[in-house]
Amino acid sequence: MVGRLLDGRYQVRARIARGGMATVYLATDLRLERRVAVKIMHAHLADDASFRDRFIQEARSAARLAHPNVVNVFDQGQDAGLAYLVMEYLQGITLRDLLGEYGRLTPDQTMDILEAVLAGLVAAHKAGIIHRDLKPENVLLADDGRIKIGDFGLARAATSHTASGQALLGTIAYLSPELVTRGIADTRSDIYAVGIMMYEMLVGEQPFRGEQPVQIAYQHANDSVPAPGLKNPEVPAALDDLTLWATARDPEQRPRDARAMLDQLFETQQLIRDGRSGTGPQATTVLPAAAATTRLTPVQSRPVRDRPRTAAVPVGAPTRLAMAAARAKRRGAWTFVAVLVAGLLAAGTGWWFGVGPGGTPHAAASAPVVALAGDTERAVPVPAVRGTGAPAATRLLHTAGFRLGPTLHVVSVRPAGTVVRVADTDGTALPGTASVPARTVLRLVVSTGPATG
Image 1 (cartoon, rainbow, N blue to C red):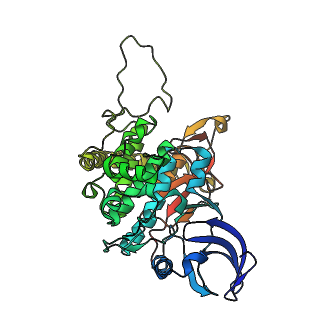
Image 2 (image 1 turned 90 degrees about the vertical axis):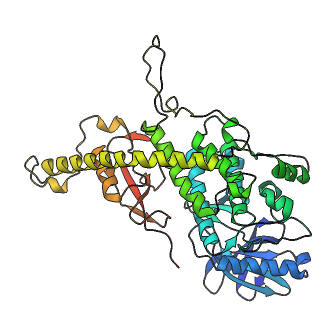
């Protein structure tokens, strides 16, 4: 196939990957002079009308989605009996490759990938499409930092509750219990697959394993997914709850769709940030009276868990998450007041020493913070500004002693003008608890709002 010219337009260059239905090749679109990925159905399946129809359905399903976290489909056609799709080419790796290299990911890395996957899935569910084959192989991580969902080959309308009676579709390790037992899928089936991927990212292995696919299917249908923290104690309890909620055996106990889970992910991120910063309800640690004074490191000061680990899915998981979110909202009012006061003080100080009486000529053109000798070697915690407005975040970073480079703008599910993350000069995201030398140049990554169209 390499070297072949499809439909007089697509020059096949190299093979990228091979799946159960098709092989993906790197090709050049001679008409538009760009690299594309061409997915060609296996020849022995091309004569099967059902497979051919499913292949065409992928093109139609994906073409209905215009979202930065979904792989774009450009074209579909047939050449000499070969059915093919032309898709956006992303140079990078898959989530499966990343897990194969690192084993498991940190909670922050997991939440970042999960946010992008759910954002793309929100667009699909809103368009009335369920993916039905979510797995790490179908999550693409581009070299430029983009994260996209691909392979809508098993996609169906979200209102459809029928499935093939000949065989179960989708990868068995990520199939929901209702797909295994009844062949029925809806948006909550996608959520179950996301929960299994979440477990795998946090733990480094799938929750159910067996020598035969039927053994794994049986466990999905009859066993509850354990909490990731049973295998990895570094997993915050809030992420345990989110995983258990997404992988509940009863679909009625899961988030109703990707939008509901993404909203809860944002609440979970806030809960974890509050715990790290010492403002959460779990931050107080009682030390024995005879204990010597100890300086706690970031690892030692992890939030104390408010519940024991349990292997079973708790029936009240959604309720507990809602209660935790409510606590975060009650604290939010006081946090807003504190941030507002800090912002006003920072603004007043900047005015006084800048263009005000305490400033020097041309002070307005100078840097907002003047570091003393040796300050550049002092490690300073980066303020938690994710989710705040760009002006407030700028003031907080200046007050902490950092300089700011040009702002980066990205499409995000967050409202326009909201800070998505803090990055270094190369645009690489900094961890939520990072400490860097004073006067370091940082960049704000600010949302332009959700994609339209």
